[in-house]
Image 1 (cartoon, one colour):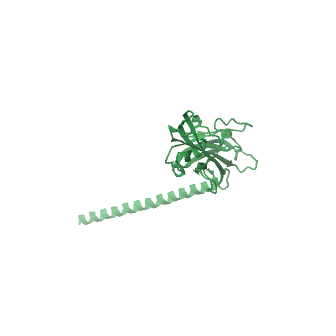
Image 2: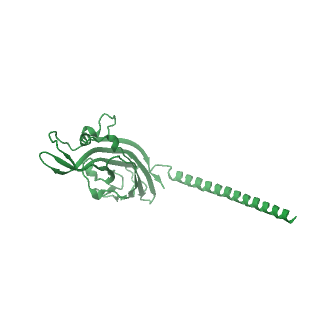
Length: 268
């Protein structure tokens, strides 16, 4: 008789524990869903209107080389590199009506990631002087390691030697993708054909465009003058061909193209 009572007691205890854990799980799920819903609604309410966006991006792609030595009969490449300058234009939807809300206080680039790396070479991202856009020059001090913080200014003139941007978004963010060391220590012995320092070097050395294909992403972070924080993630395919695909940098021409984008900055 006692064993029967003990057995019933154990069964009742087990059932109680199962019910307790089931009710706890249901309560946890409901609370979590409510929290998630509240966060979603809060995020949606914060982003009812677009304060900042990137509506277009301009690319300039070519190639160049640093020479190690040269003579009448030959010259040696130290570093054959491909570069693409990138200009990102922030739209603050101001119509020149600048407010604390639509002007910049801080701007930075973080979380740089090569989602597709080229098969040949060493990819890097650099800050580029606005005045040097489309010019072939490598400034190693401008290479971005982990984060790029901009000087935000309302001055009438800016020194773009260092990362700088106007607080009213009048100037673009200018970066340069560089794929260096595509070919190193290579000597041209046939100098009867003139050498041009552009994408035709890639063709001359039998570098296929497919081996250079690159995709890159990074975050752009904004703080406005109300101390509100915004972020967008930029995804870029490095272009090597014209819009109609009729020419490429292999033809000895640079590629310049503007791409319409729809990158909204979301208030965090």
